[in-house]
Image (cartoon, rainbow, N blue to C red):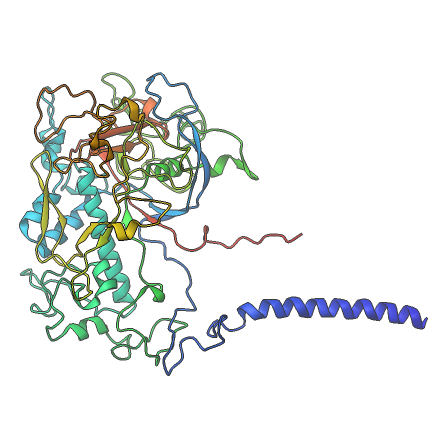
Amino acid sequence: MNRKFKFYAAILFSFVMLLSFESCNKSQFSNNRNVSSATGWAINNKKGGFQYNTNYKGQQTPPNMVLVEGGTYTKGRVQDDPMRDWNNSPNQQHVQSFYMDQTEVTNVMYLEYLDWLKRNENYEVYLGALPDTLVWRNKLGYAEEMVNSYLRHPAFSDYPVVGVSWVQAYEYTEWRTDRYQELILENSGWLTKGATLTDKGGKIANNDSLIKSGNFNQDAYVQIPNKSFGGDDNIEGWSELLRGNSSRKESGRIANIKGVSADSMAPASANRETGLITPKFRLPTESEWEYAALGLKEVREFNVYQARKKYPWQGQYTRTGQRRNLGDQLANFKNSDGDYGGIAGWSDDGADITNRVASYNANAFGLFDMAGNVAEWVADVYRPIVDDEFNDFNYYRGNDYKKFVISGQGEVELADETQYKTLSNGKRVAVLREGEIMTMDLEDSDLRNRTQFDKSYNINYRDGDVRSSRNFNTDEMRGDRADAEDGETQTMYKSPDLNNISDSGETTLISDQVRVYKGGSWKDRAYWLDPAQRRFYHQDQATDFIGFRCVMSRIGGKSLETKKRSRN
């Protein structure tokens, strides 16, 4: 009996010790996040020292966006290729999580951008951002009401904006980044609220001498906060602007960031350690767009996709099989010659041109109009091949790495005047605004002993059969940047210079200035609704069937909810 008691007591003791050990292991990491796991020193101490937001709750979902949880998928077509262009051969890729606009950027969203430019920038910047409304004209068709009304009339407020070139869409993402970041800093007390609001006369309401243009810039704020509005940090009043309002106790001290002491000696501006500096809005990569459009979650079973989707919705047809809407089209597109929306009295898709965004069902990710309505610009430079042998993770062709220009005093330099680029259509677009940080190509010292990249300009990297290029074995082949005059890919393609078109034997339209656009539009046949389809258009040009939407990278965890995994 005594031996049996000792046996059970030993088992009980072992069990208790095991629970204690596991509890101790857990508490070692999670007990007190305000104590350094490396040194034991206090974090966010009232008397100074290392400051960090130890109570970060995760990235906020930006307005009009949903999370697209990343994963693996088959990029490219697996159907027959009747076009015989072989530019989208199937290959497996992995995409990281990101946020994406639920809808295409609408006319009213773009008009807000134009209104801000008109009030805060010079008139030439505003003109450069205006969509080309003449894209609606046709030599043998009447469309003057579209020319006059589509962009501005309230009847079209929630319709996707068109007539916007890739360059203009890119500049929109830059503006949206700055406005969103400015709002976050105002709401968290790092900037005075309403600092850049203007009165009816267009003057800055707070202090007209304080801010040159009201052009808050995220990069400038992170690098040199006192010049983040394009202003002079010697002007009296900058400290009040950066200090914020009553949600901050006093200059240089945090009052509203949980996990950081309100009495600690924290920076006078919100650095990245606060968790308030967000990733930038941008155009999606081709891989991100295609992955998001497919919405493969609904065909997943355990860890396997059970089917390949031809469209953003399930099934092989463009019409719904649901009894309530039996036979209705699931997107707006061109049905056949002369048929853009069916006969009067009953419409196949409810639209003859574009349609109000979100008029059709969302896909499995909660994204609307990933087929039909308008095709969409993506970030990639077009090439006929996707080089999956070199990279199969977050694939993107278009990297042109830059670094900030540093002055002799070791401070980043800001542009003292707005810089423009004249597009091939004659439009002048502001590509660097006053108060934004100037950039330059990487230098030899930045590239030395690196294995993952060895030059700034990587658009042409592994872009085809080098031996068939017209400059093979010449000195020009070794240049790491395309021709400075027009940026043409001299070593691989002979394409026309749209600024100086001449009959000089051009053999292709492919150049470093053509960008991929994805998805079918109101003007396309159903063939182009397949998310795997890829086409290209010059980045300077605009049409009545290409729009865009924005994305933002997801930082931190892959998903919004932490997945509990079994340890068995």
